[in-house]
Image (cartoon, rainbow, N blue to C red; front, side, top):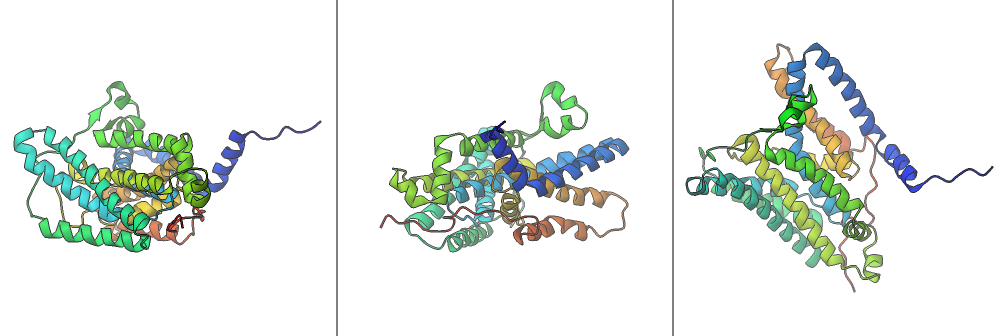
Length: 346
């Protein structure tokens, strides 16, 4: 009797498991350890996991920025600068409008932060797509520009007056372990979780996502069948940078409530490692971001515990993970074939 051929869904499932087995294994071991420590001390374990989700939020937003850009063939190493400038612009907007708008000033700051991120994306797209500059140089320009502008206009002692507070989702927030972690968060954290699903659907289940992946793999073939390569790349870079702008607004208007020089602290570069670790998929990036966020949250928790380990060593964990990912020691990723290559119709 002939054996039935595997369906497309079965093939995709096997491909996902093969490409992400390292990340899935790490997450599986982490889950087992979480359940063990939750049985030992539920309060501390829940606090660490809640902090891990908060720490992962700007990372996964930055990673999704990288995913949208690189899926269309554009390398964006300016995520760090985009996050930093958006954090500053969103904060300053909220500060200047807090007397006139009250609590609404924070939301105006969030919107302006997102738009400023999109403006930085427009600048990168202009340099990379229209001028056909080296994309690494273009991203470096954005990083330097953000550091210079925020450092020049920075004023010490400014506060936004308030920040976005947690909104418990009714009975869901009372569920043991996961209730406080997933259902008792500020609004931008909830929005990020929704955006992970939305970006996944956009990339894999829409015509735009199909064209985006085609442009990233073979732009000339896509152009031959009528796809506007320039438009696809422009829109993806701008949309991705808006997500990085949201990450910056999250840092000042939800996580901290103030702005400090260089407060992104390398999160934009860690987001690139998160993107690679997650194999340029939204859910994979989220899993990797949770892992990085857990390492950061663990560092904070150990500072309050009576453990004779210098906190600087634990603080190195996210950056050590970044080095391992970039070096390819946790599994290599297949880049889009046209990644980093300028396209010309000629």
